Length: 244
Image 1 (cartoon, one colour):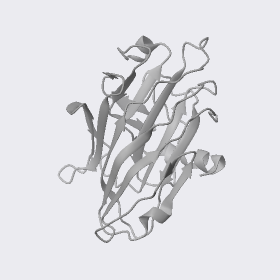
Image 2 (tube, rainbow, N blue to C red; image 1 turned 90 degrees about the horizontal axis):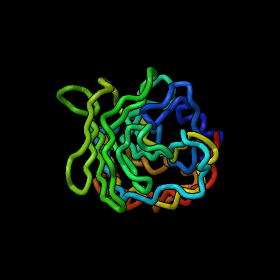
Image 3 (cartoon, one colour; image 1 turned 90 degrees about the vertical axis):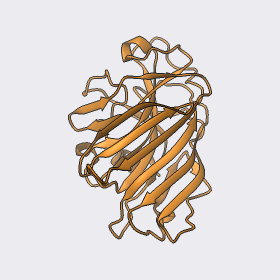
Image 4 (cartoon, helix red, strand yellow; image 1 turned 120 degrees about the vertical axis):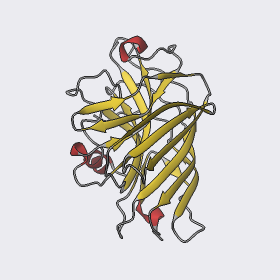
């Protein structure tokens, strides 16, 4: 995805650090974007995993308010992204971890279930993520409540969950590395793994709607006619440029 297209699709008011003012700005690094597809199908469930990557290096150490977040999120559509909820469980790191409500060391991330809304970011308490920890994520449409449920497991233990965005039928899913400024230095390459999407009805050409900017994969495949789509890994690539 080109930077201009990426910036037209990703909310300009997306603030991953929950303590930030809604007037803040953010820069974006590598990303992928899937959707919107034709036919009216929506994502019933998305699951994926992550081995916690190293935190950033070579960043502007004089900026005590600097933060970075990595996430995968789902949204209703690509029509008006700034005014739609984005359900996005996320990992966050701050130059001053305490100021972000993150009780982690300078070499660790924090994780939480989280949703961007037009009124601001909502989410649970941050949970420190030990180096190299295994994280698993699930975003799903709850057929009983019509809410979007999100869950986060850390080394097999459920550590964060949230339900909101009633009535959303996810029509796009995307990911970005996000930073509070253009001086976030280097984020080492990492991969979202074991990606699985379960659709409400078959989409036979879903992979044709995937685009990448700095990220890459071998593509999404389906063995059941387009209901379930999987990717072994989506590599986000080494990130050194943060476009505001």
